Each structure stands twice: as C-alpha cells, then as structure tokens.
Length: 187
Image (cartoon, rainbow, N blue to C red; front, side):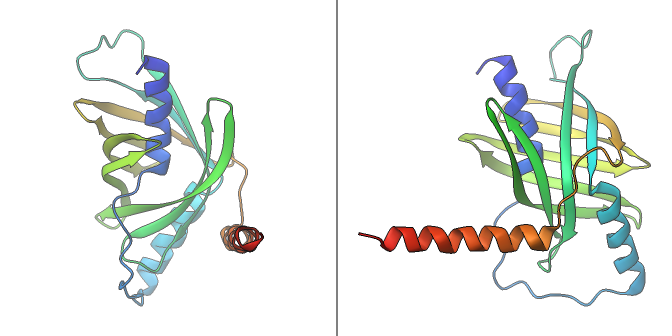
C-alpha cells in the first residue's frame, strides 16, 4: 500500500474505528448529575470540531511530519456502556461522505476522555488499534496497523466542521433502509 493510501486509511480508521461489537444486552445506566454534565461538555466540545495535527510512523525519519485532519460533525452518548456515536466527515479518494460511527470512549479521571479502538478492520484494511487522549483543546495518542505503528497529535479546532442533528440523521438513515427493503421486494 503506498504512503498516501496508508495515510488516508489511517485517517478513516481513526474516525471509523469500532472498539468491538455493541452488546445487544447492554442496559442503559442512570447517570449522576456530574457525569451527565461531563458527557454534555464532551459532546459540545467535539460536535462541529476538527482535529488538525500530525502523525508519525515508528522507524521513519521525523524530519517532515505527515499532516492529518478529521472533521467531527456531532458526538452523542449512546445508551450502551462506554459507546458514543460520532458522525464524521470522511474524504477518501473521490468519496466525500458523513458516516455515523460508534466509538468507545473511556475516561482517565473525571476530565480526560480517551477514544479507544482495538483490532478493527475498515475498508478491507486492518487490524487497527489506537488510544487517543483528549485534553485542554488538544489530542495525542498512539496507533497501529498490523506491524506499522506510530503517534498522533494536534489541536481541536471548535466550530470548524458542519454540525449535524444526530436524531434527524438516524431517522433519515432508517427511512432510506426502509426504501431499500421495498425496492428489494420489487419483481
């Protein structure tokens, strides 16, 4: 895989990474006020933001860093455990689309979210893993794609990405799925 394609796949992976299947038996947990406030702040901080920075590859010259950019339209807590629904803009070759992605977010203390992705495959590439810490308007972490791995870091720019209403987006996707089912039944 050439370096440009690997860079694009890495960017897509970080936005589309799933930490694993969402358990159908997960139960919604009632949150205390402090946790609800923390979750609300996290959602507002990332909705409509862009992650702008660089990534490295272990073993390669650090003289010229490779830039990266991720557009996050919206982020909302899901009822299942530590899962959050990120709606992200993905640019991959000729394609430019918004995709809903469930991601696991763990917390280091009360104020530091960590996006957690483990052994995930996307667009036929993988497995990918990452740990991305978010703090004070910045992000930093590690990533791996098979035997290739490195670091990523940058700033979070507020209000840079177009925001999207997650519930409206989910209704739209369900409606399209129903339309597709009707088309499948046609002779």
